[in-house]
Amino acid sequence: MIHFVGAGPGAADLITLRGAEHLRTADAIVYAGSLVNPALLAYAKDGCRVYNSAEMTLEQVLDVLLAAEKAGQTAVRLHTGDPSLYGAVREQMDALKAQGAAYDVTPGVSSFCGAAAALNAEYTLPGVSQTVIITRLAGRTAVPEREALASLAEHGASMVLFLSAGMLPAVREALLQGAYTPDTPAALVYKATWPEQRVARCTVGTLAQLGEETGIHNTALILVGDFLGPDYERSKLYDPAFTTGFRQGEAT
Ligand code: SAH
Image (cartoon, rainbow, N blue to C red; front, side, top):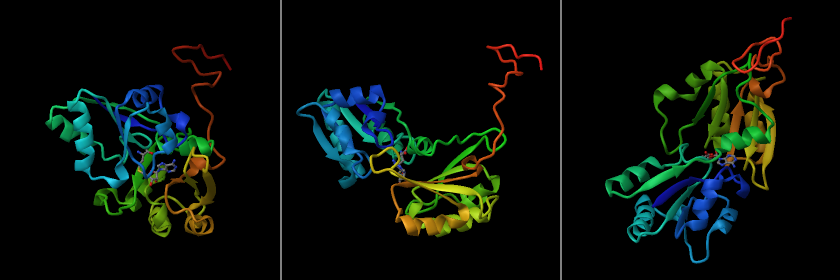
């Protein structure tokens, strides 16, 4: 059996109970060494074979996973955050499926959730935004033209940019072509939930400057939107006057 496991954003105790159990029982672990906290490998049993996928090709990763599976062993493919975001997992799952290998997926806490926690923030504030746009600037991986950052920025929604902290001037320019202004709150979160986590608040206008000042250029998320500002409306769900399926509202 092969388990794809989300490692969580960094802190070793932010993996799920199920994910930790898979690590404890694995005969082989292939972990994304560029971003997964090596402290998670402490869950592995004695004799577990451990491979760092940062130094491997897709084919080499598949060889390790398939060899374990064919030998009746258990393998874990450990991805940072949640595997479904920028995880390159689909190509692995499709290749395993083509070989008839059994696999499943255990989700993880994505870094965008870790970053919100670091900022004590809520992405979906009433009266501010009810949408979170998760995107990136194009790097070696292209972004479809219809998803150009400037056009996504037209919504003015809460936004999280992965894989883009090394391109802050370009991020700022694209955001300003949309609904955001130089005063829209923004933040850089470096290594959210790791011991070396750093959080820097700024505005869209000062994003690039903040990158220079802090030296944060990678392993960071850019958060943008008025959800980082002071104003919002209180929830209807917990409003005393509001009736829900679970609670009768008080007459006002
Ligand atoms: N699947 C992962 C994302 C992998 S892409 C997830 O769900 O979080 C790698 C990018 O994710 C990094 O370049 C960075 O932008 C972001 N990232 C991953 N872990 C992070 C963390 N702990 N803090 C801030 N950003 C992180």
